[in-house]
Image 1 (tube, rainbow, N blue to C red):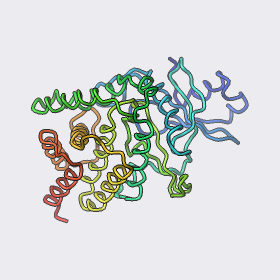
Image 2: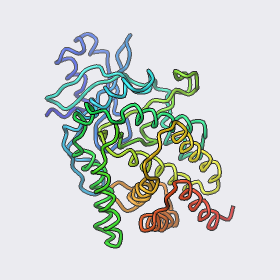
Image 3: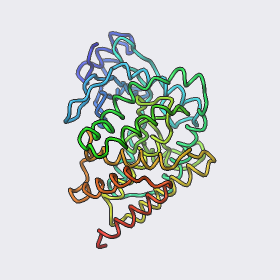
Length: 347
C-alpha cells in the first residue's frame, strides 16, 4: 500500500489520472484533524469543488498499542451507500471514487466554514434543537434498516466493530477491573447476539458537522452532516444510543455549572428518538452500553482529555454503579447523574 500524505497526494492524483498535470500543478492538499484511525486530507482544486481523500492505517494513533485491518475502509464505503439511500440528501457526503489497492476513497468536501459539533459542546454550548434533530436522525437510520435481510448479509460481519469498539472499550476495561468483568462480558455477548438494524458504531459529536450558512432539507439551520462510518455494521442499536449518550454526559460533567442546559439537550435527544415510535427493546441494555462507554473513555485505550481528575473519579463511580446495577429506564440514569452533579457542584 502506498501511504499518502500532503507531500505526495497531488502526485498520486495526477499519476492515477484523477487530476490533469496542469490542474495538479495548481492544486494543494492538507491534512484534516480529528480521528485516530485514518489519514484524511482535503484537496483544493482551482475552479472546481474541493474533495476529501480518506486512507486507512493499520496502526491507530493512540497511546496504547491498537491495530485494525485496513480493509475497514470498505465497510465505511458500503455504509455510506446505505445512508445515502435511507437519509435525506446532504446528511452524508457523496462518494466520488475509490482505490482498492491503496485502501482509500474520495468524497465531496464539506464547506470550510463548518463547525465540528464536539467543539461547540466543549465550549459549553448546549443546543437542545440539535439534540432533537440528532435523535430523529438516528431513529431514521435505525428504523429505515430494521430487519433488512440484504443488509444483514452485507454488513453482518462485526470484526471491525469488535477491533475498534468492543475490544479497546469493553474487554480492555474488563482486564483492568476484574469486578466488572462479568457485567462487561455479558454485555459483549448480548451485543454480538443482536442483529436488528444498521448500527453506526461511531455516532459521535466529533463526527457531526454543522454548516451554519446552509439549511437542511427540512428548512432548519444549521445543516447537519454525518461523517466516519468504518465501524458501521448490522447489529445492536442500543450501542449507538449508549455510545452517543456517553459523549453527551461526559460533556455535561465537564460543564457541571451548565449541567441543566446540557441535560435539557440530552433529554431532547432521547425524547426525539423515542418519539419516532422506534423503541429500544430493553432500556436497561442501553444504560449498560452508556455506562461501559463512559467508563472506557477514562479507563480504556482511547481516553478523553478534557476531564479533571475529580470528574474522572465521578465517571468511574457512576459507570461502575450503572454496570453492576443498571436501571431499567434511561431517564433514571439521567436523573441519577443530575443528582450526583448537584451534590458535588457548588454553583
